[in-house]
Image (cartoon, rainbow, N blue to C red):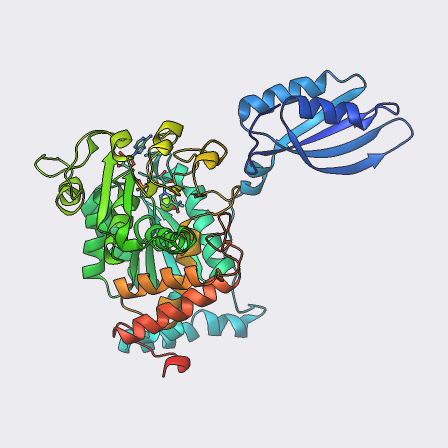
Length: 473
Ligand SMILES: NC(=O)C1=CN([C@@H]2O[C@H](COP(=O)(O)OP(=O)(O)OC[C@H]3O[C@@H](n4cnc5c(N)ncnc54)[C@H](O)[C@@H]3O)[C@@H](O)[C@H]2O)C=CC1
Ligand SMILES: CC(=O)C(=O)O
Ligand SMILES: [Mg+2]
């Protein structure tokens, strides 16, 4: 009892029960160990036995083990097998490629492949710009990672990064109809990553860099932006920043404060923390303090080996305070966590200014859990889908790339990002806005369309669109 279950850890117990075993005995055994029954399917019923699949949310592996042990003790039941729903959904990977044109006979073959394909190749040789109409480039994005900063799990390597990149590719397709390939590179070398991404770029209309640790991610993205003529977008930086700003715009409406007046404290000065800081500065926030696990509050007068910390020290912390994250929390209006699990506690929240706003965005485990923070804060948001107010870059990257691809943008610039943030924020109407609803659901179908439209408009207005869609002509 009292165990926090997680929608992302679901097991299915297939069990056989004798004729006189009341279901309540099984339900109690599950409930006693903190499991939450979400579905019961009768698979087979005969005079002597019933076979059921019971789907249960558990909190973690230990909880799963103790639950199974407890259920096994119920007289008259036999567990046939149990499976983890998350792993079942990953069997064989989560993606496959489909062809758009059937190949039923030699004639079809001669058009889609040799000899017919050769004429198309030569047309592209003469005019490479036709790639947008004659190849998959028009609608295809590479999701590129080196596996060094996967969610908040850290440097777990390119193979272990694949499920996240496959997941991003699924989201591109499901949310915005964009085809994408997960590409996990077995190198951490900045120059080599730049070289490889440049080499694969001809097939793609955009590059989504993902989960590449800082500070290498800054140089990789900057160089690729300069050297390629397609959008290069480090999602952990800019997707996160766009969504964070959207959430903050709406949260501030609730508490009646202005961007220009607030004090914001960051935990985590990595890819996401730096980009969110820059986005807030661009939106008018002047009082920002950042703290990192390794050096505490970043301040002028110190020398940091990480060049981004040096930049941070020069551009934030107007009163140049020193100390730890806990010291920075005094009178903060907003806390933004882009670091790791459990870095703040209730004592830190109590120091914040009136109507605290807490965005604990570390994945999969936030800087503070909502059930602990909620009594002490006015607005609480996390990056997770199993709590209200999900601040996750999935609200941004499908729509921003849809908008960029539709106008064949050469880049995704600051104006396009700001347009995306305000578009996301505007999908929550004023009469819908509440502490539990500052940001639209990931499944709100209006989000991608709103972002697409505003992003394309911003691209056209700032002169980075190669094609002007009819609605903006
Ligand atoms: N909700 C969302 O949409 C997003 C959330 N994130 C989360 O933000 C976090 C950071 O991601 P990136 O900036 O891409 O990584 P990064 O590797 O570039 O930076 C991580 C930063 O957090 C600090 N940090 C890491 N673990 C920590 C811990 N346990 N305690 C204190 N500080 C810690 C590091 O010192 C570094 O400053 C991750 O948890 C990630 O899941 C990142 C992108 C999007
Ligand atoms: C959501 C995401 O991109 C991350 O946590 O890294
Ligand atoms: Mg990421």
